[in-house]
Amino acid sequence: MRLSLTSRPREVPASVGIVHLGIGAFHRAHQAVYTEDAGDGWGICGITQRSAAVASRLAPQDGLYSVLERGPGGVSARVIGAVREVLTGSATVARIGDPAVKIVSLTVTEKGYRHDPATRRLRVDDPEILRDLAGRPPETVIGRLVGGLAGREAPVTVLCCDNLTANGSFVRGLVEEYCDRGGIRLPCEVTFPNAMVDRITPATTPEDLDEAERLLGVRDEAVVVTEPFSQWVIEDTFAAGRPAWDTAGAILTTDVAPYETMKLRLLNGAHSMLAYLGADFTYVSDAIAGGLGDDLRHYMDEDATPTLDVPRGFDLAAYKSSLIERFANPALRHRIAQIAMDGSQKLPQRLLGVVRDRLATGEEPRWAALAVAAWMRHVKTAKELDDPMAETLRKAVAGADSPEKVVDALLSITDVFGPDLRDSVVFRDLLTDHLGRLL
Ligand code: CS2
Image 1 (cartoon, protein in one colour):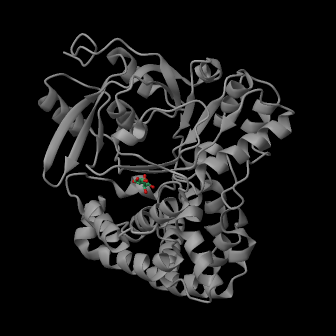
Image 2 (tube, protein in one colour):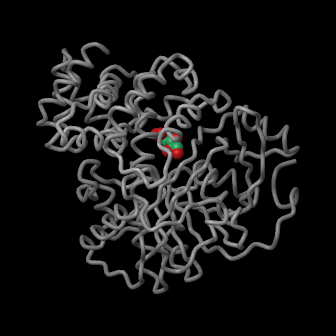
Image 3 (tube, rainbow, N blue to C red):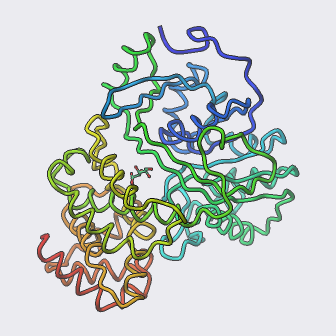
């Protein structure tokens, strides 16, 4: 028997108040669970942006799916019913236009925004953006988002849940830029709260599907697997109400920035460092068992920590230790290759901010530079480069036959490093030194 409403009774569906763009595993393991736990009747319409596969797995199950929680102490499964409708991308504009929709949330990954990573501005020369601006039914995320917002008068909140610095302000900037270029005036009030999201969610494997079936007694083709830990800190500036996510454990606050910088630089920064230094391992937990945790601790303590503005009363030492414990969770089987992808889009907010802040105070960002050098080695030596800038990166390093030349070629990509890091002699020397040893 397959998971569906006939296999598990569910209350009468409440109206959809949230349209979510990018209904991948992370949204289902994080925001959808908070929405379910809030228990106040908000439903989600999940829209896939790129692959229709998720929709074809969720739709026959009436949007139901299970969350398989894998902790060091064991595994559990629960069914989530917050997703009430599942659509594919072309439905986005019309669905956002529905006045009953109060929130449009997004998890489309860093590259989904088609921005320039160094300046954080929309790439207005991107061919797909240009085609959207020229008036075809939009196909890019920002084109579809603006298309939907342009068709409504009721206030709405756009809630970015991707791992980007000041993610709400960032998306506001992209929307404004797109509107400027297209001569579009939005008729509705829109707010863009910033948010920090956290839950490690590896890609689901066939073994996870079997395990969920064993636990639930029904087959679920849309299982998501995740860790017990979950955190969500949200700026409380909603234009038209929100679920009681605070009763489900989310922190609603006036200033997300300290939490967000901490998470991006400590968790995600260490994750990326591990992914490029630990390329010989398959899973994150293997790399920690293999001793890589020490390098991560050096990076966190010596480079990242001095750049952080820690919220009052926050136990940073415990937070850092808990990160290593979470990475060490052997039950999670989080593939390193999943983290290693899209480095050009991830480095700026995870590691390069740390590098800049350290350089600005006259310090040497030794460990952060080691992580960046490990990425450079990855670009130079990986058989497959999974990155939207793969072609540019490959071309840059093609003829570079020494550490100096690889560093020079990659640092010159100012879309990633900006002119300031390209021109920093201290950073360049650190990279060259590390890369020499790594290669
Ligand atoms: C990871 C993140 O894949 C990656 O790049 O660093 O997805 C990480 O697992 C999440 O941000 C944890 O909240």
